Image: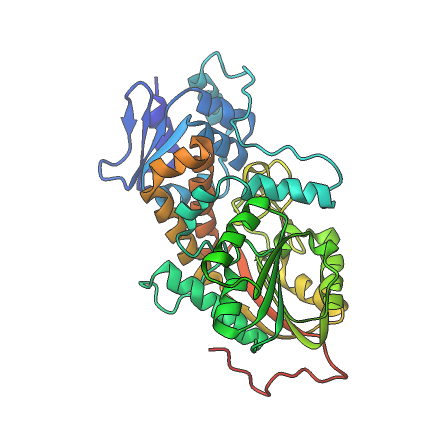
Length: 428
């Protein structure tokens, strides 16, 4: 009878740099494999068979029924992981036999699955979605993100540089595009732990306001403001963008925020930012974007649903990303984002893709998590740490292979037709 390890090795093929080991000590695959998939329990097969695709694989990994020793990126490059497991009837029957008599036993999802209530993208549900992802543990985020506490794509001039240098370069690029000058009022929507507003105040003399609906982010940000002696120059509020009414602002940054807004609320979002900005003011929207063509992957860096493009396998509200990582997140094709901004009254003046930069950023976060694994587990628990290792590594591969995009979109609120931009702007 074929062992489970041999069956798995046969499915991925002889050239895959991955080996397999099962709970009974059976091993199959190349001796020099870059990674070994460890099947710790028959429950792994039950989860995969009961929820085929990324959700079943994700649940098995989060629960510890599956593990990866070595290079997790080698596993995530397998076609069976990228596009889902596709077996013929004979193979499914064989796999069911290998799973044993417990196959039909219902298994509860491992800890960490989101179950939100209420109207999608209402203020209350958005707060719950944000809390699920961001209010985990500031200590955990400090391990993953490093000293910058910046949870968005960095900008790299040298892949060998430090993550902190690349994150500072990203903030400086945003400031340059916004044309920030001393005394300008800046609103940073979805400000995270305050990195952008502190940078803008410290380096450019801006009067900066950051808003977030994450209480733990606000707590960290307020402490950071005090440590940098930026009291009176930086304000961090616990506030929804729909509740902000103290415009006009000279500039608005939205970094990694519009992915959480949702397609149905995107017009509301940009209309609100347009109202808050003075004539001649600039908006910089930095967001992960869907591609307009179908692709074979269900792993995404933010959000489980794809809108403004083709939805493909592994997406929808039964995806791993929606259930465990970014509940209610939605990726929208960049053309749709631009059109919605312009329908709100903005004039889009500059668009830049940073896709190559996000793969580098995510790999640094994965390395930070793996290097600080024990502390991360102590801070947030083993299921959460496993979720993040899988999600960030998978996300890195979607950017590196062109299955997800990320764009910075610079727009102005015209002042009687004047943009205020140089004829040929150069942002460094």
